[in-house]
Image (cartoon, rainbow, N blue to C red; front, side, top):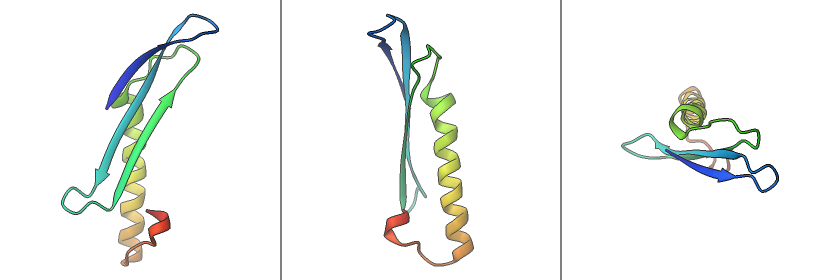
Length: 78
């Protein structure tokens, strides 16, 4: 996860860029996810608390779909 500060050119206000990158399952990866969040509204965003939950939801949806189908997903949906 990560967080970077960025100063708006228009307002001069500091904003955060938040990201989180992961893959699953650990033993034999079949999906990789990167979530990058940007807010121009001056919100305090952080990789671990804002981006990671979105990545987790994507991984869980993928794994649930894979389990329900009982066969590998086509490459285009990975």
